[in-house]
Length: 125
Image 1: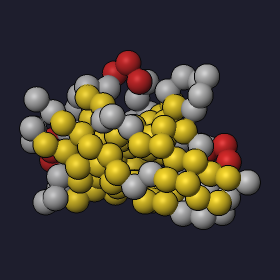
Image 2: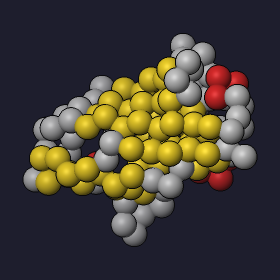
Image 3: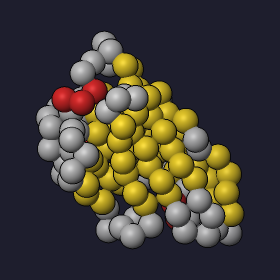
């Protein structure tokens, strides 16, 4: 059974940075593309970033491109999301996601195989 555990969320001022981590267990981590989604109050869960199983290919939502960086360490079974230049509109619960395949793309939430429990990110103005 896949288990994804996020950490690193918190409260930060606009313009600040946070680094989220997601530790995976229970499956062959390096065999799957991984990603991050977020969900703000009253809104649907939305795609943020994805990384292929090898880490060579990354994909970002337009709203975070140039500010966020997704990376992975297959030796540590961990995927990261470095968030810089944070804005109040980035406030949301951030979820780690394991895809059903090896390629990174802008998956709809319904195509995700497994989810983490989420970590809150709050950006104050």
